[in-house]
Length: 191
Image 1 (spheres, rainbow, N blue to C red):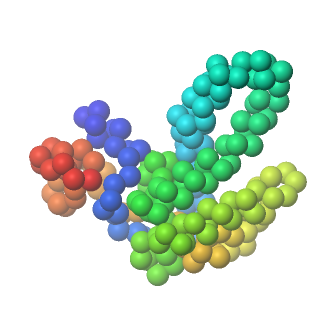
Image 2 (image 1 turned 180 degrees about the vertical axis):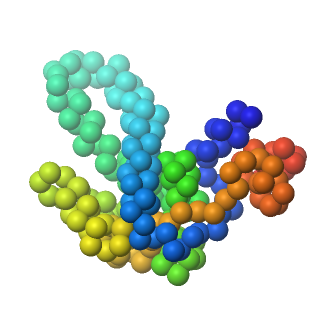
């Protein structure tokens, strides 16, 4: 049972079917925000915080001399970590752990899986989306003006949509899916 709950955050190679009609839903836009918060938390706690800790132990004097600027610097470093994290997960799996949890999927505008190039372009445009005072102005305005698509989505030709997947283990097993705990219950090791 716990495996099935934890798998709510784990992407797999086999993507669920995209529901392209949901691309312009306001609910998807809100879910994208929730997914981004989950992913930023994962990036900060599991990737950046351990790095900051190791650097503080190795360079203790310099770390202490920076004082309160350490937090600001760590938040600045978080953006490239998050962009790289998103790029890798979207390219390999079509979704990040936060998107899996929120039931979202990144696909090309015609429904094909997200490509290497499209993932790279959409995540490089995170930097453009964050421009403005306050940050996120361009990304938010772009999402409202283009049916929920960020500027990166428009340039890369991608959309973020809801995914159609079984919600419990028995449905996953009966659908023949090799994702998550449903596959492990069947004895398959592939993801």
